[in-house]
Each structure stands twice: as C-alpha cells, then as structure tokens.
Amino acid sequence: MPTISKEDYIKTIFNFHNEDGLPVTTSKIANKLEVTNSAISEMAKKLAMEGYLDYSKYKGMNLTRSGEKVAMQILRRHRLWELFLIEVLGLSWDEVHDEAEKLEHSTSDSLIDKIDEYLGFPKFDPHGSPIPQRNGILPKIPKSIPLTDCEVGNSYSIVRVNDSDNELMAYLLKIGLVLSSSLFLSDRLSFDNSITIKLADATYSLSEKVAEQIFVAEEIL
Amino acid sequence: MPTISKEDYIKTIFNFHNEDGLPVTTSKIANKLEVTNSAISEMAKKLAMEGYLDYSKYKGMNLTRSGEKVAMQILRRHRLWELFLIEVLGLSWDEVHDEAEKLEHSTSDSLIDKIDEYLGFPKFDPHGSPIPQRNGILPKIPKSIPLTDCEVGNSYSIVRVNDSDNELMAYLLKIGLVLSSSLFLSDRLSFDNSITIKLADATYSLSEKVAEQIFVAEEIL
DNA sequence: TTATGATGTTAAGCATGCTTAACTTTGTCT
DNA sequence: AGACAAAGTTAAGCATGCTTAACATCATAA
Ligand SMILES: [Mn+2]
Ligand SMILES: [Mn+2]
Ligand SMILES: [Mn+2]
Ligand SMILES: [Mn+2]
Image (tube, rainbow over all chains, first blue to last red; front, side, top):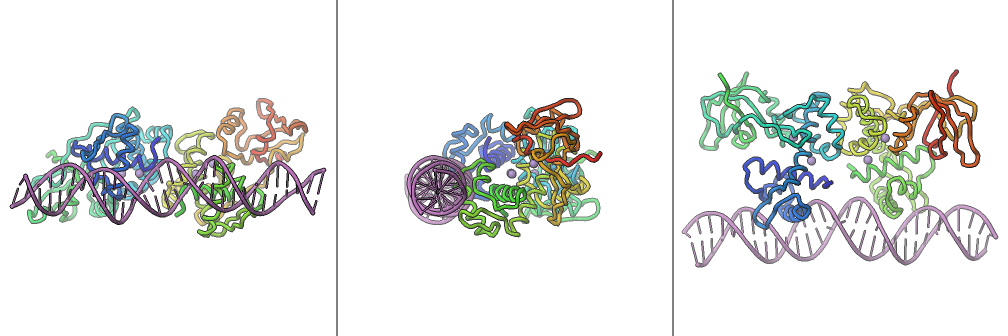
C-alpha cells in the first residue's frame, strides 16, 4: 500500500529503533537515505497521518503497530531475496543487498511465500539478520555484541554484519571475514579505537567505524 | 536509465509496432496503459527528446535504435522472470505476467544474466513469446496466425497466447487451452465472428476478442 | 468540398517526493 | 540565566507523471 519511498522510510525507522530502542531522529534517517532533513520532517508528518508513526515535532519517531507490520513485510522480502539470490542464483555476499533493496518493493506476498518455501523457511539471512516469518514474527537472534565492545585477548565468532555498504562487504569477503568465521582480538589503539584482529590466515587492522558494523559472540572453547 | 513509466511506454510501443509494423498511435498506448491520451502525447515528446522515439505530431511513434535497445532489455527481463517464476518457483501460468510486470523494472543486467544461465538460455517464455538474448537479438518465432484467421475444419496447435489479461489466462488454463495443445476449429458464426473449437476433452465457444489473443500453427498430420 | 466525429495535442492544475533558504527549538557550556 | 551551535521544521519551488478541459487536426462521407 505505501509507496516505494514510504516503504524505505518505515524500514529504516524500524532498523534504527531496533538498534537502541530510542525514538529515531530526523538526521539519522536523512543520513541513511541520503536526503535532506526537511524531506524527513515532511514525510514524518505524512506517515503519522497515515497511522504508521507516532511523531511529535522535535521528539523523534516511533513506529505504530501498523508501521511495524509494514516494516516486517519489507524486511521479510529484503532478507528472503538476499538469501535466495545467494543460494539459488549464485550472487556474491556483497552484491545481494543492492538487488534486494529494489526487489523488496516489487514482490507480492504470494511470491515471497513461494520463495520462503523454496528455501525451507530459513530463519536468518546471509548477513546474520533474522527473517520475519509469514506471521510477522521476527526469530530470536543469538546474543551478540559489536566488535567495538570486545576485549583484547579473546576469541570471537562472527554472528552478524551490517550489510548496507557493499564496498565494505566486498572488503570483508576478500579478507575472509564472513559469517561464522573466527577471529582473535589482539590489540586496540585508544588513539582512534582501531583494532587488530587475527583471522585464519592473516592479521588486519580495522577502524572503529568498520568494527561497529561487525557483531560477534564469544567463542566457546 | 529511463524511469519505470518510461520503460513501460517503450515496451508497449515496441509490442504494438511489432504487431503490424505501422507507426503506433496515441490511443492504442493510452488504452493499454490505462492513462489518458494527453499523458501519451506529453510522454512522446519527452521520449523523442531523449532519443528513444521518432515522433511527429499526429503521425504516431516509432522506436529509434536506442529505444529498441531499451525495449529488448525490458522484454528480456519480463520474459525471463515469467519463465523463472513458473519453472523454479511454481507460480501458475496466469499469475506470472503481473509479477513480471513489476520485477522487470527492478532487475540489474547481471542478475537477469544469472537467471538466463540458470534456465539454460531459453528462447521462449511460457506464453510462446521470444526472449531477447543477452546481445539484444530476438529469436526467430515459428510462423503463426491468429485464431481469427483460421479455416473451419482444420486442426491447429497453440503457438503463442497474448498474456496481458490474467483473467483470460486463468480461463484458458482452466479449459486446457495451453501452449502446444491441439484444437480443431469446428465452426465460425459470421454474426459476431465467434468460433467453436474442440479441445482434447470438450468443445468451447470463443468470442472474436478472445480468438484474437491466440496464435496457432496448422497441425502437421 | 465542407461538415462532422474521432483522434490527437496543449494548457492548467494536482500529488508525490525531493531541494534550498529561512526560521524555530533544543541542548550544552559558561 | 544567556549565548551559541546543532538539530529540526517550515516555506517556496522544482521535476515527474498524471488529470480534465479546451482546442487542433484528420479522415470520411454526404
Ligand atoms: Mn541487506
Ligand atoms: Mn528499498
Ligand atoms: Mn507477460
Ligand atoms: Mn512494467
């Protein structure tokens, strides 16, 4: 029912709210969607009018029940497409996000249900995010923390990666930092919060900004 | 590069031109796309400016080389998706056109090439229309005539069906009039040009408007 | 050949989703 | 508290792709 733009707004608001539980700010969405703050302010009014958002000026936004339902629908489409493109059509880890970003707006419920069935009703997408089920319920995610919050000297396994920048994805794929791989956190510079990690075959230094995108669980020894 | 609207305009112009070789009229496109004539006139000017059309007022439209290239691209996406949805995801004959009508605008060249490869580089879609190859070349179609031009007393096999109305498609599927099936043309009323056909299991009367959508080849006995 | 209806085009206006520029509110630091 | 910068909002305007209404051209038949 909503337009393509509105679907992307609603999805983005959900994702930010899901990160920290706080009302989502205008600037965050503007930055993510690469439009100006004023576009967000205007759209927020419309989405609130249409019942998708709770919004009061200067106070940020929260999805209503109805908005959350839309968000689940779009995330379901996005994440099932990502998995399908990798599993069935052989696209690579770093290509699927951009394709899914478009396909998520052109897929009927009946088609996405067929894809879900074809894949065997998977619970997680290729980057470790949970796939909303047909009933709108989001599978429980394994406990994980961002690499920025980890302790030097420990080993971790990759649980989830924020896939929204495909250049970053291509880099992580290249160095072998993919889902389920192990890493050892060997150092952190307090100068810039950059970290040093050991993967299977080599050692890499990652900036704080990169480390923020990577979510891990403590390795069970 | 063109917008979704423009892609649909260009595709529609190609299809009409392909039918009879004449310059395509404003009304035909307006009728097909369910917009007013004035929307077509305006868009024709823009598409001509952008180099996709030859167009002079009151004289109809023809695609340029550049317009034809776009048309091939969109038809390729549309028809490969239709086949893929049927072959891989199990959608039915009458469902795929509407899905493909949306997906054709959200599919990168690299993704559609993967689909093409997955299907084994097919030459025809599920309704008998040729699928443009990666190089933009349209496979040669088997010689066929509309059911309206057939002779009473002969047998024919179904070569192609115009799939743009999904209610009609569902009806044809229901009565077993699908690709490659045989029919015997037993009667024609000159009163309304309706025809009577015998399929494997039963006899049906089809209006002229329906018969126009069905293309057949004389059965080799 | 001229009237007439069908077909096609233009003009004005609207909704959507953006922009920039001007203005308002908020949070923070002194 | 007061000042200042950051964040957010509003106003005005633009492009796209439609609409309706008015106007232009075409085809054709008396
Ligand atoms: Mn993604
Ligand atoms: Mn999207
Ligand atoms: Mn079709
Ligand atoms: Mn389309």
